Image 1: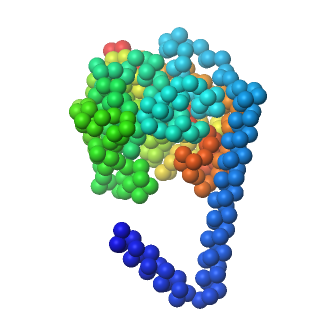
Image 2: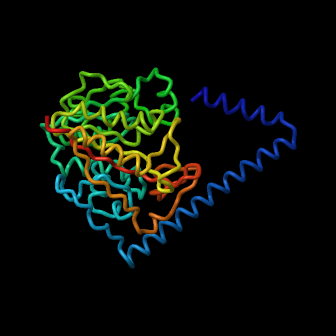
Image 3: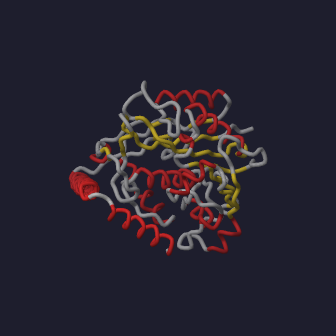
Length: 337
């Protein structure tokens, strides 16, 4: 606290030494940024209000299920849509893991991963789960509260990549950073949950025999489209025969041609994911059928713009460069033997 106050005081003193014209420009810019923030808040309020009014008049209905008799009806590889976040299971899982049921794609990712695993009877005291790139996810505590033995993994705190996530408050630096006493009793949590430093590009060979594994919007950060898809394939080696992997990533709604293929964040297209499905199924795995229906609700058409405020905005769609993105979940059953 003292260091923070010292730095703030230093900045204030430097500011006072600047020429009047420069100080005025800085103050004007600050006012402009505050105005942009207020415009965004106004847009959010209008979008939420209109979405609620529309839903009351014409409730958003999910489309007909894509056929796939290998999985229960609710278990599909699918896009985040308003119809999904209007389902009863969404609020149920948000409450279970101590998250606000915000109409946000990240909230949907957490809830949908939990719902898929629950539909497949994988959340119980005899089960083992492996989480990749978990950051500070509440799912770890949520699964432990169901009696699941969880191995939570993320980058080693000393790694260069982890420092960036730490600055944004998205790296747990070990077990204690994942504690959620309101979700799981700390004693039970420490008994059932363990931590491993794991780079998703190099999964240790001893991590095997799990009933399920998962990751939330992580594999698009591995440097390229190919690296992310390689991770999904490698993650299946951590599973017992017939085990389930559920991974979410960001999906390009704008184009099945142009996208970002390399860099800190890549964006998957429909053709990339269908290619991954074909590749995995050729190896004997089962990929739950893809439902690429983008939805018909108002929030399926509302595209959020930066600056983004996680958990404060109705964000099912957002703009990244020239592309409109949303989240997609990929569900895979490992081959039986």
